[in-house]
Amino acid sequence: MTIVDVRTPDPKRFIPGATGDWEVIIGMEVHAQVLSNSKLFSGAATEFGKPQNSNVSLVDAAMPGMLPVINEECVAQAVRTGLGLKAQINKRSIFDRKNYFYPDLPQGYQISQFKDPIVGEGKIVISLGPDRQGQFEDIEIGIERLHLEQDAGKSLHDQHATMSYVDLNRSGVALMEIVSKPDMRSSDEAKAYMTKLRSIVRYLGTCDGNMDEGSMRADVNVSVRRPGEGFGTRCEIKNVNSIRFIGQAIEYEARRQIGILEDGGAIEQETRLFDPNKGETRSMRSKEDAHDYRYFPDPDLLPLEFDDAFVKALEADLPELPDDKKERFVRELGLSIYDASVLVSEKAIADYFEAVAEGRDGKAAANWVINDLLGALNRTGKSIEETSVSPAQLGAIIDLIKAETISGKIAKDLFEIVLNEGGDPAEIVETRGMKQVTDTGAIERAVDEIIAANPDQVAKVQAKPTLAGWFVGQVMKATGGKANPQAVQALVKAKLGIEE
Image (tube, rainbow, N blue to C red; front, side, top):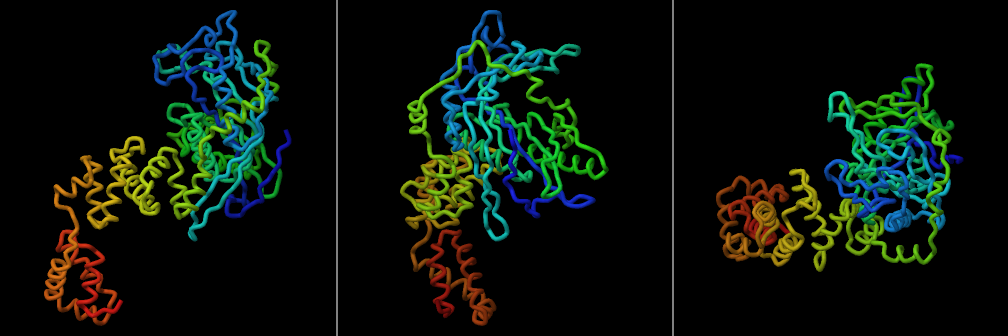
């Protein structure tokens, strides 16, 4: 495979070294567990968290005479993902045996795809920003291929003082290995790529993207070079299971390689591990090449073939993906690119927002979801799925503001009550006397009292009319935040003789 450099060196992404600037080159191989009820070649369950060695069939355990049978749903999920990546779908692909020996690989080989993968070249567009001017930078990252393969089991080294155990629950689980081109030039780009890829597979429903459960993990290939030179020797950082760790691993590894090269050394191609506790990578083994695995077509499996009708049926059923949804939010609801980007970052957030925004002002709904709801969830470390405020409840709060039943300030207090105690917003407003005061007579009396009690401030306002806001604040305070803010502002200006 010939690697083509599609990026123009950008000084703002250079890493300064002792002897000049360097550029980091990043490619990623992401292993995404296919969402399916059973494994790639057996009927064993794939449910996470089951007792050790309870989701294992005779095929997974490589018992003699057991033959693999392809799971059609796993094939469909791979094709859906390929379509979501705007990639070429190969209607004929071949499964190969990748030969290596390890205790958690009972067959002595992994069934994978080498020369003929199910999905060919595609692309992902990542967005970096906003910068200080509020602008976003869109960068296209090429996808080299997506292929299906089996996962291995798991070696357990902490169960016994002198022995290691093997759990085969993951053995045979379907994985999509999604291989990017070496198109990323910073740790921020790599994190944005992983975030976007996880968002896409979650929208598609082809992988749950739960990195903490091992459902999605990345092998990160890192090399450095002088700007404008050819690609350097890469090192692969295996099985990084957090987007934050991906960024940290790249930053450390790039610095490590730059240090070696500036000291006159050479980079050895090797596989490394990232230690999140120490924030560093360490050598694991020398990097294997394809010939080390002695790939050959699996004699137990025929070539995988399907027709255009199979692909078109899957394509017709694809959901709206993040980029399309973001564009629609900006175009139809008038949202800013930033707000739309936040709302489409997770499918659950986008679904929640659309439920709130239905029949209401989109910008108001976006402000409440982003600033109030997501802000509260971030403070408590909860996800949108765990929120105690339903879309109907948040929508009801927005409706009460629009009807001028409550002010914006009262709405904030009401939101906190609903968040912590639950209940119907309209009933809470009624029973707790939270309606805003719209009686101009009552508001006027409060304004008169504040003006009469503060002659010094009145004199200051005559000299500087912008200080009228102080009186508005005092009236709102005196009325417990219940006065209609617009009415208060109008009366204050009228009483103080300030022209609109």
